[in-house]
Image 1 (spheres, helix red, strand yellow):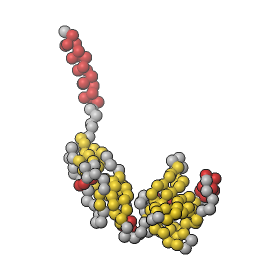
Image 2 (spheres, one colour):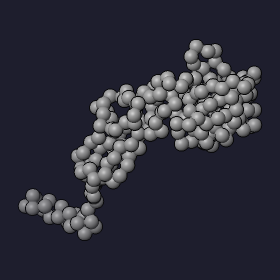
Image 3 (cartoon, rainbow, N blue to C red):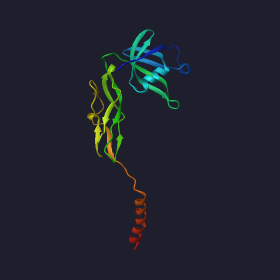
Length: 203
């Protein structure tokens, strides 16, 4: 996985007012921590950071902080729900070759057998992988599966070097028989049959 390079500016002002001023300047307040270092308060370029995290929540970021390169991934992203903009990010420092634990999105692929519906029970799974080789997603195929079929976490094919930490018995996808509403004429026949059955019972 390639890194996204971002220039981060160190912050000297804190609080809600300072954060609002940063966001008005199209920057995102963030804190970088980990590996025993003191928390580092920085401002990230808003547009570039949002693009980096838009399609990959575990994106590897290469931060240029006052000429020093730092590798980090987003640990916590606070998003304003109405405007859907990032308000704050907690970043954790990682090292090349280091293995870390992350939650990875699960993507369902393929189409189950006709007359069935697919229910995804787990949207993410916890895995351990090298910080510089984190999977963007985990795929599960339901192609041709019949009603009653289930796929658990332990049945997924993981990329090389990735270890599953979630319970192997975790249900990921279930294939159920599709509910089919009765046709209008069948519904009408059933409605007519009901009073007739009641009359028979009364007699």
